[in-house]
Length: 369
Image 1 (cartoon, helix red, strand yellow):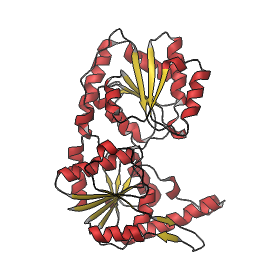
Image 2 (cartoon, rainbow, N blue to C red; image 1 turned 120 degrees about the horizontal axis):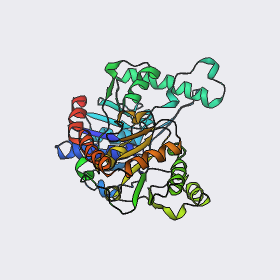
Image 3 (cartoon, rainbow, N blue to C red; image 1 turned 180 degrees about the horizontal axis):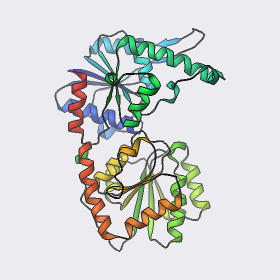
Image 4 (cartoon, helix red, strand yellow; image 1 turned 135 degrees about the vertical axis):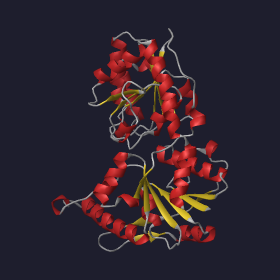
């Protein structure tokens, strides 16, 4: 089968990582794959060495005044040359551009988050240019979607329900296929507590919705409790400097380490004690599964899409009301009970196995076919 995967760029993120993992596994199974991006950004060079990648210029700017700017000729030429059986898009920008193509390929679009720009709006909500434009984009999107008979893949029950509720789609148009990881890459051994320092870790971009400042507040409380720990952040982003300054202002900067983007996060996870996560909105949370596969108990705030991942007290704990005191209490509960810690670590590894990429790709191929 000839398959094109399209995503705006390969900057570090959950959607980008999944697109790469899908491409690699499809290639292993003898499929022809072309990965197309719109921006020459690849922060996963170590994982994409075997994937044919092409960067093209493409853009679509919609206007409710009827002056749409559509630049897709280079992309159209690439599609015509490759002649794919399936075009699989990731993220809204790729989706809205691909819907302008002329192609006989089957179109699959991956929902990696709840697309707020496509939410239903009534006339009383059309109060500014941005909302009017979003209303127009939604109308244009749904018209194209239905005409092209696109099928959606949602990454969680939350995303699945959102697509049906806000886009008015039927169950047959939305396939719920929970995201996967390269399980063998992240798989660790079950862990035991010892007398050494507790190593907390968080992985993700520093953007407002990730809300890492909450984890600094948690660190302050753990320090007050006399728990011997440090906290490592992996990732970069616009909010990073703000979080660094916040840690210093709270007097815990000597306990917090900012490593930036790393090429092998699995090494850091396997060397840690416990994974903590603070996102306000998390469509699923692949990193939570990766952490579990590495043998780490997980303590996370409610991000809606990650509700399906936490089995309370078995692979970690969910913090429902973003209270740093409760967050710190759950961490303390785990790291002061060696028996519970080992039990959670063992179960987390077993739990994560169901998200391995091999059965996931079986399901993706069944949708392609």
